[in-house]
Length: 254
Length: 305
Length: 68
Image (tube, rainbow over all chains, first blue to last red; front, side, top):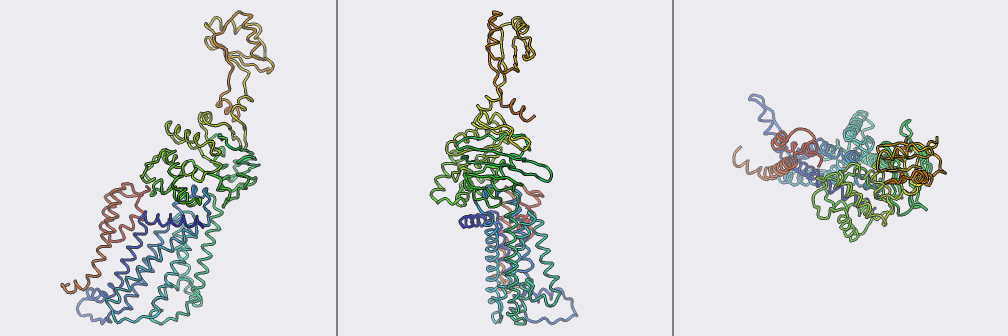
């Protein structure tokens, strides 16, 4: 336990000192601000592309558009940035051998994996909260009469998908021991989830629904309860990924 | 009972057998030189002791506690200095030792006092620079400081001096000598002069087993050559002695280089008295009469060949 | 765009500009003070960091910065 806390502190210190935390926060803050802005400016942008003679009537932008931007940016760009930034989570320590000193001091390997996962989850949580807060604030400012449903639940789903993705990243990084292998397997996991989504009955249990059904939830076209099984599955899969990482890492020859 | 006991250790990588039944026993408060050629399996042995590698068979106990692969509880008795210690480049020495101390479970005040003491010992006391900008020698010294932080009963150093210049080497050896008495030190090397300088016991690893093991004086005694070096005032007296009838025996081999004669005797019963007898009979007084001491180097080469 | 619209978007523009400047300056300082990179050279990274908005500094810190 004390090893876990000490190592967690080191991880946070590392993200701060290597500017990774700073970059995550700035990028998610920028997303947070631009989401409502793009929604507001969209009609103007479209207009500037249209030549005379063609008439397209665009609906007045609303809070929904801001949230569409939020779920699109955060899921696509945000998650990609996060996975890339965290891809070296284990590989740099393994290739340089920085863990040897600490492991021979009595640090448990389980604690290494758990604190690395905790730290990634913490950074992701702070980033998504920051992004959500900014988008929420500016959306209220720009579209005062916007009504949304299930907003918090929808963001929670996205957050949970981030947890799932991080667990997959940790697992693949432990398995391959290098950052490119880690990225590759994580990418493969996402692609497999997307392909599985084609099968109609799988959609209910597929973790990726957590990142694709968000707007449906906000527009109330999807029932919150329809995602409960997905949430269960995602938690279970994340747990399995993290446990497997521990098992593999404990058997790894360093 | 020894601090470190290794019994019948086997390890192979692919079909290359590195350790073939290694037995080793390190008694308390010794500086134990673990000598072997490059690739003899020194690092492999150390990594097995630390639970970083899995042995094929055999057992290792540290302070009576069995080493298990992966999560080794025995590690809390051990301080380890890898051959090229690696640190987090963004930390300074104090921050790094604080992290190590927290992991080892020391109290805050203890970490602070111990860190200051150790940084003083290794000469990095006023170093506020990040470790990223450290030289090889500085990293090695910080490596010793981190290894000694939790006051281990056993300090294991993997080739602590081989990558350093003569001054850096001397510094490291002095630090190790200073740590003697507080802890037992096992250090691997292929630099024999380092061993002679600080070790009281050595073990030579060759072909996956210990080819030689014991205290330095014991080993030298055991491998004493029955040889003498005689120096004369002129070449004539030297050749006069060399050609003495009494020395023309199959058990005695002579070699002369200028006015110096080397005598090697294969018969253990024959000793210096015999040569002295010959000398007094010929009425020759040599300038120098010395027993040939085996050097560690000659021993090592003899064993490894 | 007239002055009124500009004023309307000021609450957006100010934080965005600040964020971009903060990123670019931090990265620029790092590029200049640590002249060893995993690949590329100083001139390249200065240009990347200054002229590719947001992504440039992120790329530098994720891939460009050398080991300390």
